[in-house]
Length: 298
Ligand code: KPL
Image (cartoon, rainbow, N blue to C red):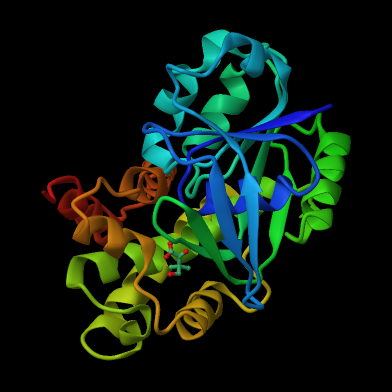
């Protein structure tokens, strides 16, 4: 019987764990021990209980790690590689990894370094934690899965089928790199500004923030063109403003991180854009200023 390991018990990790647990054994790994009995509240308000095997990186038995047929890495981008390193000695080297991080930092690095197959996923599923005992699946979304090296298309198909059957509709895609950069563009235009000014996403439509978003979108569009990332159908500005409107009432993840005194994902989101700008000889002053600001945030 296949075993899915979920490394990173935040909202996304627990949503995946509880959804997948209906059909297969799942083990959840987090820095502190969690209760095995967990509750999933569905978007329709139904409460479903499941018993998961919960471990910390140090308590994870080698025999369990070796049984794993997939490892879903669901930590924040800045914690992903260290979290994987803490259990890697017990995994089979050919264990397939699925990377769920924002940005475009972990994905190319682990695709190059991990000896087994590596898939990348990006999702618009909405979830938040319900204490230590559960997760609320707040809204249905869509998940895209693919690989960066063009070698694991059939694995992406199988995983997409498994997630879809578990209630998380997923589609295998051949251009996950483009999809990840599109998500990164949206995150770069929204998250650092709302985190810096302590505002909800929708307030970006108002003065004085609107011109700041426009400056960032202009830098992002230039970098993407130089990097050969095709623009979304209606252009970068339309994509960003449509997400701002659709998430107007949200406190973005980076704002929540700043407020909770946690590190932010600025390196994974702004870092690749600034580095690509540098490679192509493009100035990115607005992105660089936000990066510096978040880098020095307490
Ligand atoms: O992905 C998001 C986030 O909060 O990280 C957005 C799209 C900005 C929604 O809040």
